[in-house]
Length: 366
Image 1 (tube, helix red, strand yellow):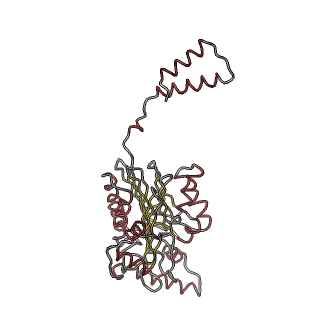
Image 2 (cartoon, rainbow, N blue to C red):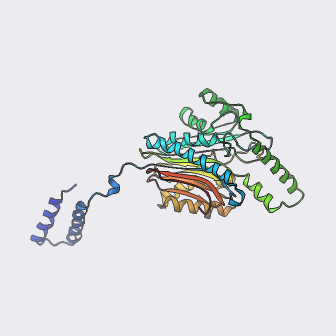
Image 3 (cartoon, rainbow, N blue to C red):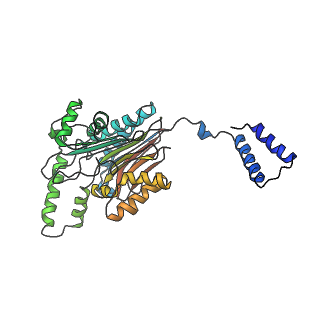
């Protein structure tokens, strides 16, 4: 790089010798601008320590204040805060985004409040079938499991698939066996089943039977559609500048034929790329698969130069939403900017930045 003294010397000599060529004027102008930039002070932002951040969701859908008691709302906000603080502590101590995502999702998988791990929804047969995925933004490596029944924390199994297998996705009994070989904690399938989910399955089955003969009430329609959703997810940026994303779910209430949604599908429910962002989705999975939501947000940022907020808005409202799907995403980019976008009436979500500022939200208008 030229020194400031040299630049001024060239400009002065050019003027003294009255050098005149068609290119001299723009050349001198460029040198003058370069000299000015050399004098510019270093910005405060450039002197700041590396940033980091974390964003989570606990499912989206028809979440209305009118249907929420103060006790239930407090319970959700408490677990969301517990989960995000677990990941934030790891990041603050210089830990990796992978570890932060895994430990954060563990908190939500272990809570019966969310449709993931303990408290997951039930299939038409009254059984558990859990899905999860993870993606590393630095390497674009990824892992996923689908339809597992004995893995206490499916997000950990997804990470082990990424790290210790030649594959990206394992399913069913094979995935359960892989987790056992990796030394992950296994439980009896009954561990996941709660009274709340048993009653939800009964109500959805009753509505399904009624719909075959007559139209459902509006409240019944809303309830059934709400059972199509529910997932937990986390995205994080660590102090090394690496992004990661993870998603875990019990799927859809009353699902049949071993249905698999978007949560374990890389590019649909989960995506991370250090060049752009990390995304985790929640909502009606079939529409997220068809819209390749998570990757599409990253692609708009990479190819069109959009911000994470604008890209998320376009994909959720103008693309996926236009197909008839609803739900939301959380995301974070490589500068720590975030998105918590939805076209549903609520999404359990939280964000913490490098300064430790905490935001916990449930309703769309928060």
